[in-house]
Length: 173
Image (cartoon, rainbow, N blue to C red; front, top):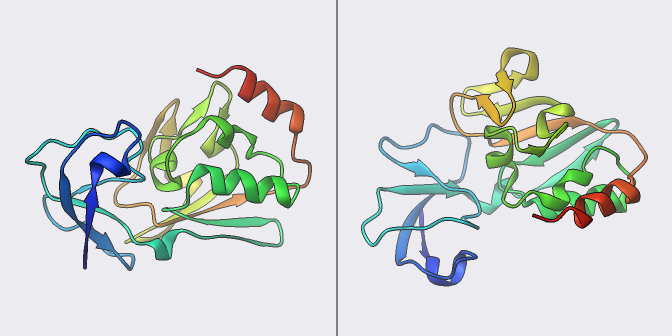
């Protein structure tokens, strides 16, 4: 299935053509020669782009099971932050400063100095199944992941930190 995206109204930079984008509706390999895009927040698309793909809205979810938070790869950072605040979960305050969707944030180990997405990561789900954090080579703004991040799980504990959130907001880039 495809979706036509009008990049001039879809992205934050408000320029770009209308493009048919392939929707990944189930965890499967990215079609050959396709490039995955996330929320396309800061994406500049040429008038003749390569084939593009993105996760379907089915991967925009967030729920808690005990001390584990499940988040879909298409879930925007703002939604994760709101959920963590509402449910008093610590470790997600950095979402205040991270644009985009979870899949991209995990793929690049997004973060702010010592606060990184991988800090509380348990595992990710790609088209090849679940991969534990210990099996992923990652570092500062880097994660070696084969495939598309469809879902991730995180450890969670009580204690959303409003002071940390305020610090991130104050140190706006």
